[in-house]
Image (cartoon, rainbow, N blue to C red; front, side, top):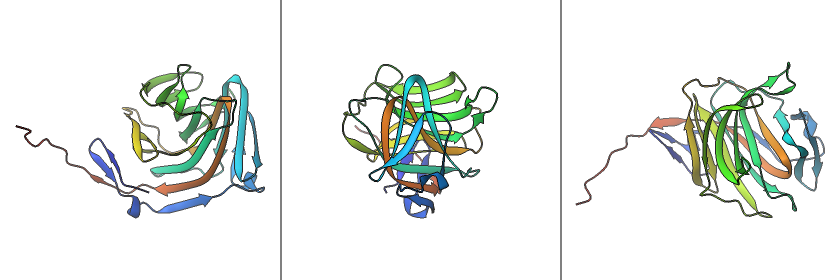
Amino acid sequence: MKDILLLGKKIIADKSSVIFKYNPDENWEQFWTPKSGTWGYENGYLIGEEQGNFGGILFSKERYEKDVMFSFTIGAVLPATRDLNAVFCANWDEKTDYLGDSYVCGLNGWYEHKSGIERNIGYGSNLYSTTSMYRYKPGTEVRMTAGSIGGHTFMVVDDVLVSELIDPQPISGGHVGFSAYCTKLKIKDIEIREIYWEEFIQKYDPEF
């Protein structure tokens, strides 16, 4: 894993301790809790699917109160092509029986094949950072990393920073997991790290 450069911060990969590492197997429910949608194990992958216009959510059993990032290999299962989504600092709303305060990141989502991060507040969002510049190629697998440093959220795809979002009202703690939003996903090689970061002084040198 490479270091991650954010606005004013540098995540040092070698100093970010691995606190959970998992390759899916038939005992996956020891570590994960299906909250909605259909989830299972098949040929070395976690498989999640949901045909409705809402997220099929899978939560880690463990709740993380410190700043963490998690990495995973993910792909859409053809003919599905969209919404390769993960959640972090994620909470469940028992009243609505759906995703509550959480960060959601994803590829080929937001109905127009956008990629980015949103702050979820149940059946909606009050903060977005999306782009149409990155396009996931259906049928392939990518390596994603997502996390938060006190509300400074980020998503990296194949070692490239695709999106970052600074939340002025950060979510503190929660689960990590995945959201199959009207799609079918396969996921493997999951790793969670406690983030170690340093201040990153940024300035321009003269170009002329």
